[in-house]
Length: 148
Image (cartoon, rainbow, N blue to C red; front, side):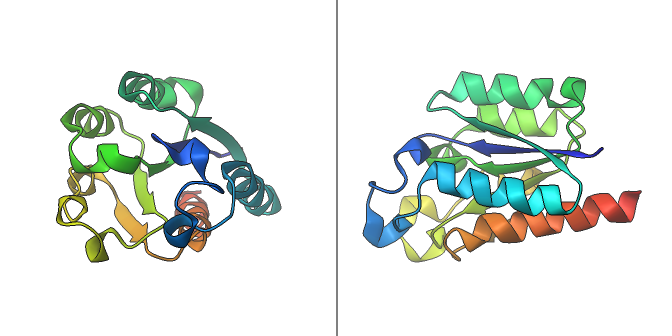
């Protein structure tokens, strides 16, 4: 069975209460439940991980190939814009990554316009609220089925 790891970076544990005008009222648990149902319907296993700590995210990425992970969906939060260490961890594993953001980072503050993750990710999906995650899951499932 294929396995998709969904990773959430810093402050995403605060979804539902954090800046609802930007991020909405959906909680991280709601997002995970939605994605788990979507993957289960396709016969794909999911694992979820959230951390506010850069090193924990890096460790999880490095362990992904050893844990049978076939795909990673990653919302790296603010680390997207400056974590070269996270970027290098992604580049060091042979597991494809889809970068996800709830908001359209390109319409926000200037410092959010650059992603250091994008050059090592398969692609980005952003600006569609929690549907960004659903679109990433859909894409990952399609890519996995095309491989089979």
